[in-house]
Every structure is written in C-alpha cells, then in structure tokens.
Image (cartoon, rainbow, N blue to C red):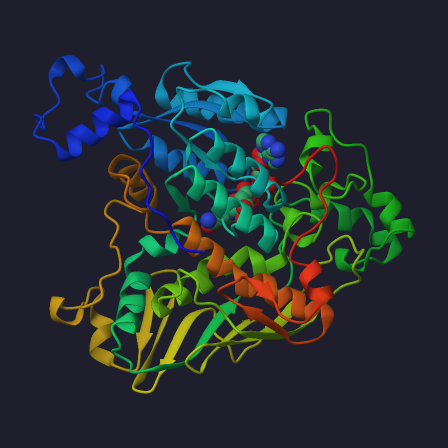
Amino acid sequence: MKPKSHTPPISRRRFLAIAGATIAVPTIIPGSALGADGRPAPSNRITMGVVGWGMQGPGNTGNFMNQPDCQVLASANIDKNHLAKSLAAINGKQKNNDCKAYHDYREMMARTDIDTVMLAVPDHWHALVAIEAARNKKDIYGEKPLARTIAEQQAIVKAVQDNQRIWQTGSWQRSERNFHYGAEIVRNGLIGKITRVEVGLPSGHTDFAGTGKPLLAKLKSLNVTNLATVVPGSAAWDMAVSEAPAELDYETWIGPAAMEPYIQARGHMNWRWNYNTGGGQLLDWIGHHCDIAHWGLGNDNHIGPLEIEGSGEFPAPNALWNSCTKYRISCKYPDDITMIIAGGHSDIRSGTKWIGTQGWVWVNRGNAFESSHEPWENDRTLPDADRKIQLPLTQGGHWRNFLDSVKSRKPAVAPVEAAHHSAIPGHLGLISMMLGRKVKWDPTREVILNDAEATRMLSRGYRAPWHLS
Ligand SMILES: NC(=O)c1ccc[n+]([C@@H]2O[C@H](COP(=O)([O-])OP(=O)(O)OC[C@H]3O[C@@H](n4cnc5c(N)ncnc54)[C@H](O)[C@@H]3O)[C@@H](O)[C@H]2O)c1
C-alpha cells in the first residue's frame, strides 16, 4: 500500500501550532499565553488520551508528559487497578485533576478536545482501538507489532490513510543514533549490494508479569516445570484456571479473541505467549530488529518478501503458553536478498546485520554497532558527503518526533506503512512454520499465492459483538 499525503482538517489548537511553526508570528510565546509553569498555555498544548497501562503504557505516557507542549486529558482501561494507577501517575505529574478515567475507550475517543492517543494494549486489541482512534480523527502513537494479523494491519493502514492521521509506531529504535547510522550506511550503498540480512530475536517465553512463577510453585506437586506443557483436561490446567479478579473486566479484555477460561499467567503482559492474544517472541520483536532491517533496505513501502519458509519448535497448540520457542525463517526478497529471522539459533546474533558485497554492518540495543570497516565504529553519523540518501534523524527522541509530526503534518519516523511492512515477514513466517511449508507472497497485491489454507491464516474470526470493519 502506498502512503498518502497527510493533510488533516485543522482544529484551533492545530492552527495555532502550525501557524507558530510556519508563518511569521513571534517565536516567543507572550507571557499572557503561557501557563503558570512557563509551558505553552493549555489551549496551545497537544492533548492526549492514553489506552493501556501495563508494561509499556506508563513509559510512553511519561515520555509524552516530559514534553512541555503535551497534556494528557484521559486514560482508558478495563482493569480498575491499572486505571487508578494511571490517573494517580498522570494527575500527580501534571499537578492537577485534568485526566479523566474511562472504562470504554470508545467514549474517550469520542471527545473532540483530545488531539492524539497513545495505544499500548495487547496485540489482539490493536486493530479495533487504532481504527476507532483514526475514525475519531486522533493522531496515533501505536505499539508494535502493528496488529495480530495481516488483515488487521491492512485495516489499520487504511483507516489511518483514509482519515489522514499522523501515526508513530513504538518502534523507537529508529530514534536511536546507532540504528539510524547503520541503516544509512546500508541505504547509501557503502557496503555494496546487499545479499543477506540477519535478524536475531529472543526465543522461549519470559514471565514478564511474574504470574508464571507462582503458578509453577503451585503445580510443583504435579511435577510441572514448564507452563508450555500444561494442556486442557489435565489436573495442572484445572489448577491454573480461576475466576478473573474483580478489578478486571475479563470479558472485554479477551474482546475479539476466542473466549477461553481465565488463567492469570497468560493475562497481563504474558498474553504474548498465547496465540489467541499475541504472537510469541517472533511477533513481539519483529517491529524492532526487522523494522530496522527494512529501514536500511528501503522497504518501508511495498517491497516485501516473495518467498518465506520457516521452521520452529512449538508447544501443543492448546498449551497454556503455546507460542513458538525456537524458530528460523528464511525470506527471499527481490534483488537476490535473503533475510534470515531467527530466535534461539546461536549463529544468528541478536540485532540486525546487513551483509553486502563490500562489507557488513551489525547494530543492536545499547548503542551497539560493529562493521567490517573499523573507522565507522568511532562515529554515529556519516559525513555529509556519504549521506546522499538521508533517513529522517529525529531530534529529542521518538516521542518528541511524534508531537513534532502532529504539528508539522509531516510523517513521523515510524509511519504506519513502515510498521505494516516490517511485521509482514513475521506474520508470514509464523504461517509458514505452522503449516510446515513455504509461502509465496505478492508484496504489491498483498496476497499469498496458490495456497488457500495459508490465505485463511491472514485473518482470524472475531468474537461477537466485535468485528473488524
Ligand atoms: N515498543 C516497545 O519497546 C514495547 C515494549 C513492551 C510492550 N510493547 C507493546 O505494547 C503493547 C502493550 O504491551 P504491554 O506489555 O504493555 O501489555 P500489558 O498487558 O502489560 O498492558 C496492557 C494494558 O492494556 C489494558 N487493556 C487491555 N485491553 C484493553 C481495552 N480493550 N481497553 C482498555 N485497556 C485495555 C490492560 O488492562 C493493561 O493496562 C503491546 O503491543 C506490546 O507489543 C512495546
């Protein structure tokens, strides 16, 4: 899908922001327009609503509240404890009671005084929440991977384009200097023609919520040491199932996914290890290191893999934690480029490595950068002469970049089309691994070729009353 121009209707707040940026008005905001704390007056701030307050929501929101021109007005959550924590944190930081609580994110989205939203909900909720936001004309900071299926991703891209919204994905590595540097070296041909890309991701399951450990302690008498071995019908499964806690609206939490009994160890944060709600390590990380790989290759738009073949180790499909624990996917791209995406294989290093006819570059978190050309390692910016193709260099961080885009109406560094294309190799790799055969993809029409069963896996049924439209 091609990106479209982003020219939104201009609200009063946006008009002021845009005027301030582009028309000859005083750059110093008059004292009368300033808030008491020297920030732009509330009427000139970008207003925000947040959905989700688990692992990622608080960090994203904190980064936005650190920007003087952002004001958080609302928080939506279906867990009363998370909602209360979000209000305490937001109103505490903003030193007022302006942030209002919502159980239903749709009521929050309907507010016309909210310009933007930060979305950090589990993957099975990404599409519905993002589409609702776009239709309500919010600019969106949305988390990776773009969605739980390719069909949902296509629906999000369409809603964002049709409504001319600014979108920033939580693929924040794009705003880190070493990733930018590596991708620019590659884009500028400084390691020759690219032949191979290696994308190394985590493997196994991680008990992020700390809810797996107490369950395993409870199951010790049954000699269970791994939640990936617990299946329905067993005594261990029966011990794992419980009533949902009173603070959680579990019916809505499970939302469009298939209804299943409540098991705390695959609720908050650990929903990733259950394919009903998440995509395992592969999809959890595809929007980071594969996103960077694509950025370097210039694949943000419709250049995608043509053939995808993967193999992995899976627990039983109905296991408590059923996502793939070890995997290796080979993707053939145009121009004879092969991308290997792997988790749990020691020959593929964590991070992104591009290999060309004249050298290689490897990048990872923690400002890590290595290359075949040693002098490059002393720097994080290419000399201007080598930057014939310039990738956007964010100023002030990934969250600042979103707010700047909201004002300028120019695309953010991680637009929705990029998020869509970055995640496609992960989704198709998972389909290939589940079917045990190669999948052929037409990246222009975005269809799987000659495989009806694989095609059906591009989307999933929605539990009523939820539907994707
Ligand atoms: N960019 C990053 O580095 C990064 C890191 C971690 C997580 N993430 C992403 O953030 C998203 C959230 O992950 P998490 O680990 O924070 O999950 P989490 O389970 O810790 O938190 C999810 C939050 O969403 C709330 N929620 C769920 N359904 C809701 C609904 N329908 N309406 C309102 N609130 C709802 C939950 O109650 C909870 O507060 C995921 O997409 C994940 O991939 C990104």
